[in-house]
Image (cartoon, rainbow, N blue to C red):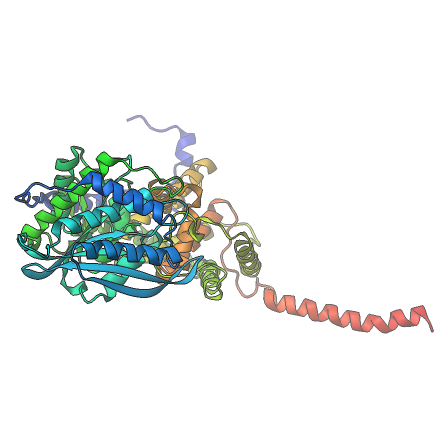
Length: 624
């Protein structure tokens, strides 16, 4: 190989020097360890088998269900929780069930809906006793947002529930149909359009909750879209893969269309940030296998103009629900429980294998960060000023989190039950301009105090910049380990930061554009979450505020907000270094005599004193 020109030899930094501190060989070599979890994950792929078809073909009457759905939507166009019409609609559903010979039950409770206050809600229950006391629940919420008649969302699901109840009803006179193997519970919930409040109430407090082994949720099943399966949860769990596979088979058979499902990446995001707008989520959260049949995708259909019903889709989805119920009645024991996995159609990748791969992907970055710290120590470069700079930034972001929580307590942000927010006509998509302006002003004032210790006072040396980057990377490593302990799937959101930002110490002599690209790549994890909400749930630019409102109502835990603040402090320090605006925390000799707070108080006192002393002089100058 030809020798490099002398000009290039002079500019080539020695490995391990301040200009080339990253051990790239260690990074590449550690990636070989990631191959082992990938190989194990390949062997962790399973192929769940669907439950057998029921003995009798489904006889769901789609035409009758369509008439019931249309009448229900026309009679009760506004079924928002707590409205007078909502109570009448609940009584109407109970009357329909009573006509089939059911003894109906009402479960009345109160719930707080963001932007609407505390309202009364009620679930309507009807039970068909079977040979076993184990319960299979059929669920459909009957409320709507009030912005439209809600013919599809969810008069269609309510009509399908009533039709299934008619099929399973025991007539008062012979001949009596054979009893089902399991007890069938028909549940008409309230508050489904506002985060599944009724389903959450049932899963947490109903006397039947400990007997429920599986649940089928019918929501917006008469739309123009293709059949869709929703099986997300409020925790990183999914219903039994056998249930999902059985639902896929029954829907395909009855509609002659393969149902869609969240993509593998979307399922992985749902494990990292558990979220669903459908009512199977509270059941899966409690360890009950539950799935939603819908024609609306990951988000329920818009309420505006929701008056059309696709009779063919309603018939097919209703028959699929009946066939799925029959399959579960014949062998629900094989489809019980919940697990973590990514569903690929006929195959699933088990959750523990995914966690193994995600944690192994941390190893190259953690090894490089530890090596960088060791190199810093060997060169006797002080790290404490860099950590103190990070501490100042961390304090600012923790203050921002605490101020946000205080605004929630004071009612500046709309609060309610810790449930997903309605995508429309709710504070989740209505930005409170006055509250945000006040919060921003208070943060700006806090930053004026914080920046006093972070303003550059002298030219930044190479060793100081390197120490600042390593201090931030050490904090990022601690954050990633905390996420492993909290929810290992959420490591997905910090992996781009780790794998991009560990190269920033190596690029300080490179063009600024390249440094900016690498810095921006580190924001890929949070942008993935924002993009998921913006696209999958059709929130667009409302996605950031929607996530903030989830935190305001308590759906996002406070501990997660603290971790987000710590990550933002890392990003702020690395951004300051890249932009040339970083300085290590100043020594006592370099700091002003008084801090910003004391300087402000001192300036105010001196101004007041000057006004008092100058008043007599002005009076003498004016004269008697």
